Image (tube, rainbow, N blue to C red; front, top):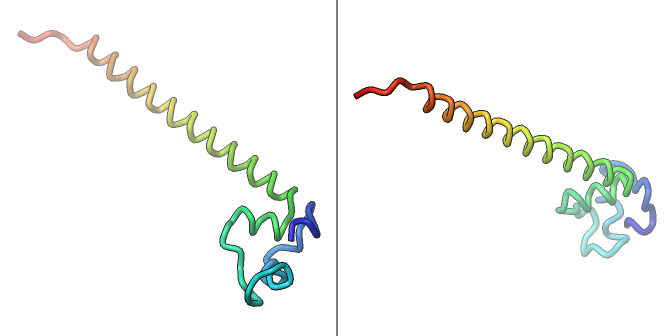
Length: 87
């Protein structure tokens, strides 16, 4: 399906109409992979946008989680240095 229309695909939510033509056993079957469904429906342009957005969101989440973890570690170190000794 991607070979026939590689850049912009067959149109959003229309791949089930074309799967039988491209080798599916029955007409109307859907593609079970989100990634392949996106490429068949909307083409490689939309796929690159999807992958770029996914990478961006993953990197942003990693950075935020890392900053939160570092902040918690700094606060716990700061508290241990500022506690008055009891004894």
